[in-house]
Image 1 (cartoon, rainbow, N blue to C red):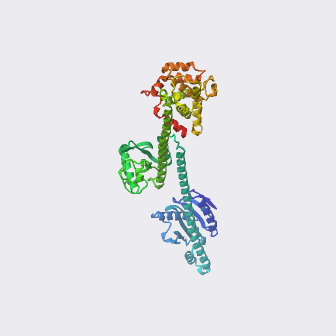
Image 2: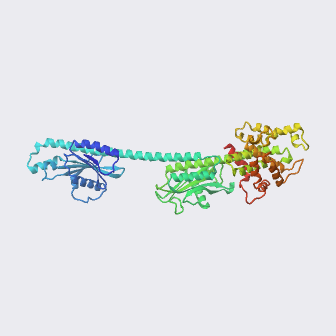
Image 3: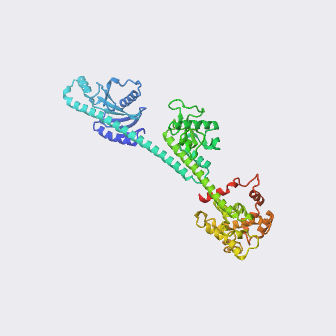
Length: 591
């Protein structure tokens, strides 16, 4: 009969013990396994065995104490009655002989230790009721029996004992191999799980690499994600800020218990540079294998710092090699939790994340340059069109801003996406681009236009739409350019659309263009005041202008808008990034 008593053995080990016990039963032997506290963990008994379980338990405890290099605390076992066999494994052998006992009480036992690494896990014990040749000689002498009569049988039993010793040693090897395999599988599983989490982190970061995401938001995601994955007390990312000769590292993102002031940032930069110059990939320091190599604040027990590289050189390090010239930031974390120090696996992960952060920052810089180049080109184009007529100079910029203002006011009571607002701004900026195809003499003519000249002017929305038609990113903007001279009553041009046939973007630019035209000086009239222009728009609601849009505009703080257009200082500006409107709009367009 076999049974599991305490659960210190794996299922694979129990299977091996079950198979082994089937073989030991053929020799009439008991198999028992005891844990390090001497408690029974597994048993497989046979009725042929001596069943001296107390002695087996004592033997197991004796072996445990021997392995622990302790003096045995009991005297039931005589150390002289044990021996060691098998050069590969230590097998304890015990002989107990009671001259007053019957033959089947002569006793032999074997024991071997099961270890996990260098740590004792259990002791396996086999008892053999028949005894060896020396026991039998003493038994025969005591009872006056001729030993020769049983010598052949005894020799056979001795061979069986030797065989059981080899079997027990082999069993222990097999059990320990199973333990090592399971530990390896568990370690591999843990490493795979860690690798999976790292891949998830890197994927999460890559999916957040949106061109419209700010540096601070992205870097904060990196810090939070790393702290969730790697148990540590605190992590920060430092970035260079300032002019070329006055750059300094400042905290851009971070989480946990860590403080980095300007002095500490400079120290970190200096020490990381020193480590990189020595060919290392990161700065690692801890008190695990000795004292800290550097002097750190008292709360720092372990620390890791890795560089962030950019394409622009820095003046913080003079004479450094090329890669150090491009170091634009540092990722630093302190006090690893659950492990004594940051290890090489942590270094690889931190470097990977730092590289992702550096790529994002560099892409953001390049994207910003692209946006500024694009909006600069558009402004140069619209300025060249406005320059054809000294009376309309700055008209396109003003219409773009007013169009955005109207859309934002309208969005207060209607669902409008931010990207749509940016498109409206660009539509306002480019609404007169078609005038590039109109004769300057017609545009600058001071007197009344002939019918032919008027038809040329009325063609500029269609010309503008055709100019942008082949630019995929501009397709949503074209309706604002094509329909900004249509009217709600159908009397506009170029198509004479009526009411809701006119796209929303066209209705918005229509109001913005009309308001700026009314408040600008013309050859044939003076500029209207704001109040006069608002009155004219109100009169045209439902005929020339969309009533809901027009009402949203004239009931807004138009005077504040006007001050912003004129560049006056406003303490309570409704938008702090007025100068960035064009770049933001381009970013939404080409993201």
